[in-house]
Image (spheres, rainbow, N blue to C red):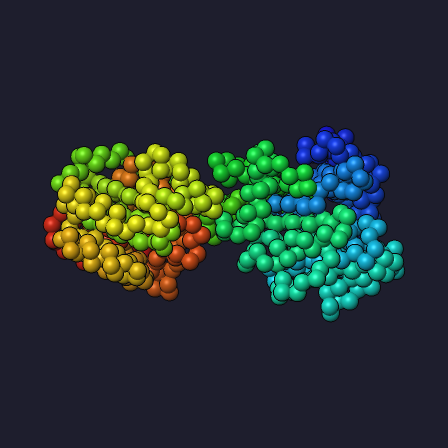
Length: 544
């Protein structure tokens, strides 16, 4: 239940009839006095930025819900139930001010002697954002200003009555052990380059404290192998009931993958401060810009709708790719000319071999026939590590396993040899790195094997052709789920001349099948069903 409260001429959504979170443990209880104190402490502070600067910090409904849950729900021993709070929310919803208020509450209002509270982020500058807000809040609050010493050059606040401090950590802090943490405010966890700082601050550093609080607040990121995504997954599992952790408090404001990212209803769902700290007009403008420029779509979805997008820039429009899911029957392809692309992964990862069949006439399509392998013994491990349903794909026949814990190249060679008996494989293109032995073996079987450079010069023309053929619905891939996943993972780099190529470093998940497809497509376009001239020689390189 909500009601509206005026603040400085503005209308602010307030919480009414508070109900404890569904994550409250059975033996825990809600202490209204403790919760009221936390709310009152924060609401004695002032806003520091924008049109509300200098006005009292009135908690909005969603903010007050979080504060009451964290500080009012106690265990039977009287200490807080939740030690870790994960708040994932789009930008401009007032998260920095809430984080600063929580930091000050832990430092000055929690009754902890010599409390150590830290502000942490990917770098000192990012960590300082929350600290600077907190320092301004202290300056604007007479009661705190008398009792808090601000060491601006050191990015440190000292609450003198309890000798507690609030300190910004440098990026190198993870190397300095010996923390006795009472509170940590982790801002923009998604931008952490690795997990070192997170582990040092959260693993054992608060053991000497009775009720430490790790306040993690972030927008969604792009790296699904990061510490933030790991915590995000845990939060989502707890929300969905797949995991239970009574010490972990999850809050995720975001859109589901299948929701319409252009819908104002979805915007309101994802942005709890919409109409308060963030204007509807600004979100609408950003959306219109993303509609006009597809490269901005992922940025909009990540920052405004809090979606974990695959990369910063989506290359392949998956709705267009899905429209090319024309049926592919291997039996109808027997004896036809085709070209192979081979992308060997590391020995413990996925390996891809893709055949591309050039069209027989103008009405025909380029047919894509992909094959994938992973080591049998690492199947379950890869499912857990990558959060990808390799096991399901294997059961469905879209993915094969090779014996042992590394890729069995001999098995793949024999498999390709059998394919050569069914199809007229004219050439096999391969990444010249790491494939020397297999190439020699394939040549020994009678295949024509051609090295394929991975730079802009070689990759750009077929990559642009793949996009063109997809948009024209002139390819048929049968809706192969592993290949679709690879295509969805592609991040593209562009050089000053407008050439493009898939960037393996930036693509956070597997793109082996996509690379193999691009290489095979190049040979199919150049050579076709005969050994005629390249299509590139007739009309030049496309610039899309």
